[in-house]
Length: 491
Image (cartoon, rainbow, N blue to C red):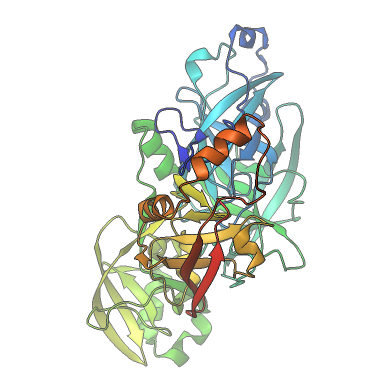
């Protein structure tokens, strides 16, 4: 079993069924007095302060998880609070939550822990121990969340590393809502109801994976590289986010080491509808004038284009085609107004089939990559289903999901379908990862312990037979198909 330590934040491995344990994941070197050898840049210009906050980060996944394999990644993070050791990264740099993380300040490598993976926006916060850092990293304190960047605003983009910073002038050329590309072969983390800032000229997303968007020496946004579907023409794109979307999570991290890894949402995906075509969908001229009066720059309203989870029939909910006009008696001016909430119930004014309705809609938790346990057994990696899976699954029958399995393992030889829910193993019902561990111990071959002792001592085997049991497993594919399979565990 792979488990994240609550004390250190790092992943460790422990045997489940008397198997030979995997080695402890190798971590980076500990912080030491050598850190004092770093020099402090005395240049106090705005660009220099940004550059001093850039740090090189490397992530090393322990095992496959959340649709990601064990590919090591490296890139740049931005120190946003040196007093608490908080670093902001792109989700592209840390897509696998089982990663052990290190950062390089100058020539010294230090260990970091995962502080918070935002469930809604493609940002991750990691953390180092500032008490052992003698070099001075400036506290930016330059965030300006009050006003959204508008189309036509001139900005300065700063991106790079601690040793090389690229600065260029750009203009906000548009805003675009990220949309879901349903691809069963990828199942990457999906970010929806998020409005990206588009810059002109367009930066190269392969050059740097994080940058800051500035106006008058104030940070107004961040630029993050984000992976697209692996089957698309361009696998990486830049997503510009208003800094105001990120600051609430940063404020929580500054106040507490523990931040609930969830926000509350309406469980739907929105698309933009121009005001020019809104009348055809039943929006009155009075409503349109009211929207323009409250937000002159607004040129659109938002329509439900997809339901993420089917709710009980007796529960009031939104439907595909609904147009949301107001939330808690306030006009919806931007997608951010309806993307997430901090309450259990919201009052909505909507247009449905040409009629205006007032509804009370319950919100639901939208959890991010809160994976802290992975069970590896019989060649399969079991984990809790992450949000992208739940979003695309027709019938999630349990809280146990298999993203992949080891090539050459017994289950791989049986041509099993990757990406599946597990509901039963050898007639034992499976609901949680603890059930998997319990059943794995029950079906263990009694000869396994003696076999492992002989392997460990390099004793000659009398027989070439590997201990194992014949097992029947019931799985449910993402399309809802129920499948019964049998295989030998070869423990």
